Structure formats: structure tokens, C-alpha cells
Length: 174
Image 1 (cartoon, helix red, strand yellow):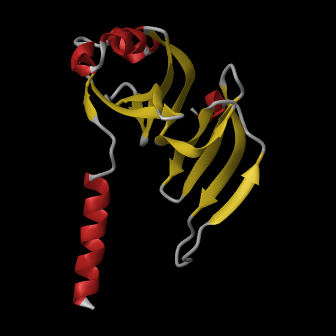
Image 2: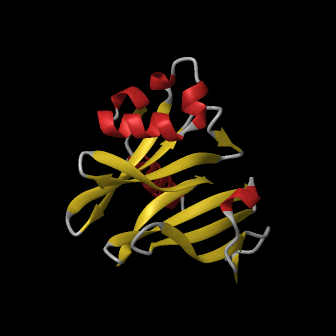
């Protein structure tokens, strides 16, 4: 039994360590992405030294090539209650175009694609027991919520309760 717990702890630590989400500072981003993020993020614009703010990024790959980036600044201004400002940028020539902005605990590309770009799976942490999950699909011009559900973990119940509902305006959660 002790070996089982050690194995479980190893898997959890390894999964966290190798999650593949690079983090760094805004100053470390490629110039075009840095320019787009400093333009679109109000917190970066008001920060004393915005280029030193931490940011997590994840590449969006479509058809074997990099087509965009998910950027989530991790400073106190951008993050509240485990949810941070999250920006999705798509490559447009030599620049980046904002395709989605929301406040989320996490956002990841999915394996399924619609209209040439992968769908995105986002999580908004409501409280310790409840989260809102949203699937964003590319409609050819923008990412739009297509499937929304509330996931509730109850005490002493192994599987969470999942309730699908119509998608709300992201601003109504904040």
C-alpha cells in the first residue's frame, strides 16, 4: 500500500513538472507577441515594470504549424481567485491578432479542430467545489463559446456532478 502512495505522488509531481506550459516574463516573449500583450492587457499597461511581469504561454498548433499562442499573465492585477486574464492570439503575417480574451483558471487547445483551428477548453474556478467549463470553437473569424457546463465536486462523492447549460457572457462571471 505504501508503494502505491509513493507511485501516485510521483505521477502527480511528474505531471506537474512536465505539463509543457512555459512560463517566463513578458520581456522574454517574441517582440510581436510582447507588443500585442502590452497593448491588450490593462494590467500590463498600468504596471510599474510591465516587462518583468510573469506570463505563462502555450502554443496553438494547427495542421502541424504554429498558428497562435495562449498567453496568461500571472501578476496580482491579472489574477483573482485562481482565475487570470487569458489572451488568445493568432498569427497574422508578422504580427499577432487577438482572437479571445477571458478570465480563466486554465485554457488549452483540444485535438478537435473547427474551421481550421483547434477548439479550446477553458476552466473558470468559481470556488473550491465548483468550476465552469467552456469549449470555444473557431467560427472562421473568432472563438465563441459552444458548450458550457458546471462541474461540482461534492464531499464524499467520487465522481463530480456535471450540468450542461447555455453559455453566459464571460463578463457576467467577474
